[in-house]
Image 1 (cartoon, rainbow, N blue to C red):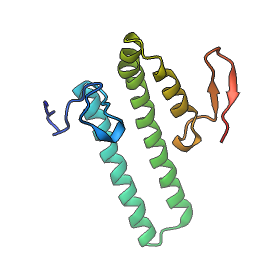
Image 2 (image 1 turned 120 degrees about the vertical axis):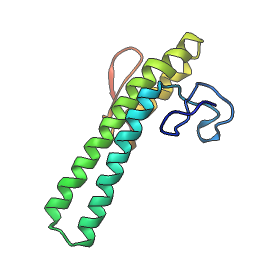
Image 3 (image 1 turned 45 degrees about the horizontal axis):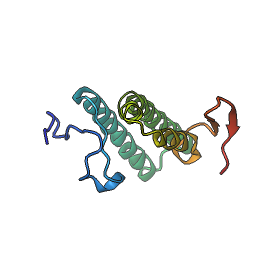
Image 4 (image 1 turned 90 degrees about the horizontal axis):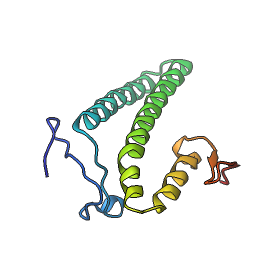
Length: 132
């Protein structure tokens, strides 16, 4: 397996050696992986800063603002990853006739636990509320 300059493995779809997600891997360009890692490093620093604020007993409103900022940053990572997932992994699986990927993406996007909207768009285009 090739390694990027950041010691992040270059990923490819449907490799059976990844047990974390049922034997599938994503495949993204090194530039995308680097951008995601940089963003995650920044978020990690934000979270450490928030912990320090709590330890120093900083005013609650200031801490809550920093938490909101970290959540927004995570949302940005999620949006970028979803975009790249749709343009690579999902596209490839659809081209190979695997339509199950559509349900997989809809379940992920519709899940409130991931911070996504609570309305799913059905295959017919009709909006339906997500059931908890």
